[in-house]
Image: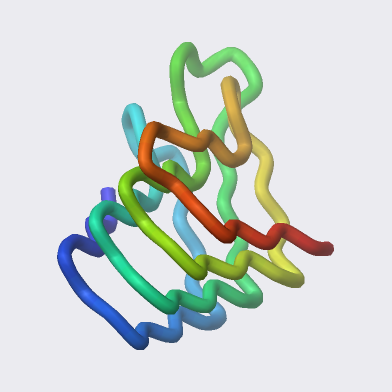
Length: 87
């Protein structure tokens, strides 16, 4: 799991994550984050594996990413505001 916590003005690009447990990427207590060009893969039979989990964060943009997991591709927790998701 890649954890981004309590940070601002982040750009994460062109990262590949394969078969992570529970979460591939967590964005927690962050501001002004751009995620682009990610490739996240997990077997369809893997239980409770989320691609990207966003919580307590604001102004997060997730674009041009390929996410395939056994559970939620993108999960949104409490306190999340101004989240933009596009192909």
